[in-house]
Length: 326
Image 1 (tube, helix red, strand yellow):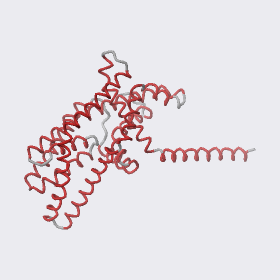
Image 2 (tube, rainbow, N blue to C red):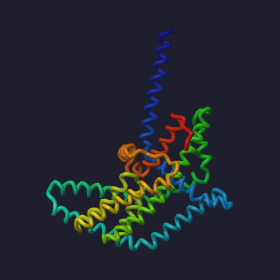
Image 3 (cartoon, rainbow, N blue to C red):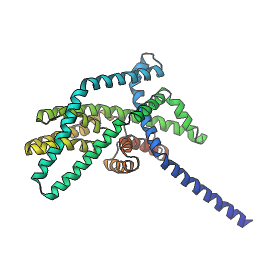
Image 4 (cartoon, rainbow, N blue to C red):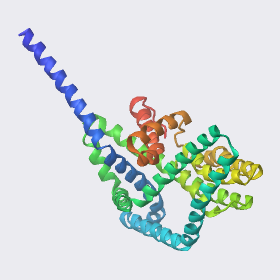
C-alpha cells in the first residue's frame, strides 16, 4: 500500500511538471498573438480615455468609443493628407543625405572609428526598418485596433470573463488588480502622448533653427520614437547627429545639446507634472525588459515593453506584496 501511494504521488508530480512544461510551451508558441492582444488592451485604454468626454455629455459607451475612433481616423487622414507631400519629400532627402553624410564622416575618420560608425548606422537602419515593418502591417494594425475598440466598448465583460477562470476567493483581488492596471496604463498613456507631441514639436523647431535638412521628418521621428523610453530617444537622435557631424563640429554640438536638452526637460519637468501616480520604472529594469521582449517578440515587444512592465509591476505590487496604492 505504501509503495502504491508513493507511486501515485510520484505520478501526480510528474503530471503537474508535464502540464507546467506544456503550458510554458503553449505560451511560447502563442507569444506573438498574446503580445498583439496586450497591444489591443493598450489601444482600448487609450480609446476609453478619449471617449470619456463624450460619455460625460450623455452618449453611451459604445457610441462614445465609436465617435472617438472616427475622430482619430479623420484626424490622422487629414493630417496625413496635408503633411504627406512634405513628409515624403523630406524622407527622400533624408535617405539620400544619410549615406552621403556617413561617407563624408568615414573619409575623416580612421578605420576603427569608421567601423564603429558603420555599426551605429546599421543599428539605426534596423530601427528604421522595424518602423517601416510596423507601418506596413496595415492588416494587423487594423485587427488590433478593432479588437481594442471592442475591448473599450465592453471592458467589464472581458475583464470578468478572464477573472472567472480563477478560483472564486481570488476573483475580487484580481478584479481590483485589473482595474488598477487600467488606471495606471491610462495615466501613463496620456502622459506619453503629450510628451511625444512636445518632444516632436520641440525637436522639429530646434533642428530647423540649427539649419539641418528635413526638420519635419526629424521631428516626426523624435515624436514616434519617444513612445519607447530610454532607447527610443537615442535612436531618434542618430540621423540628426550623423548629418550634423558631417557639416562640422558646431552644428554637431548644437544638435547634441538640442536632443539632450529636450530629453532633460521631458524627463525632469514634463513627465513629473503629467504622470501623477503612474508607477515609476527604474531605467535599468526597462533596459533589461527591452532586451528580453525585443529578442523574443521583435518590434511588437519593443513597443509594448513599457506598458507591459507597468502591468507586471502592478500585479506584483497588488497580488504578491498586497500594496493597494494606485
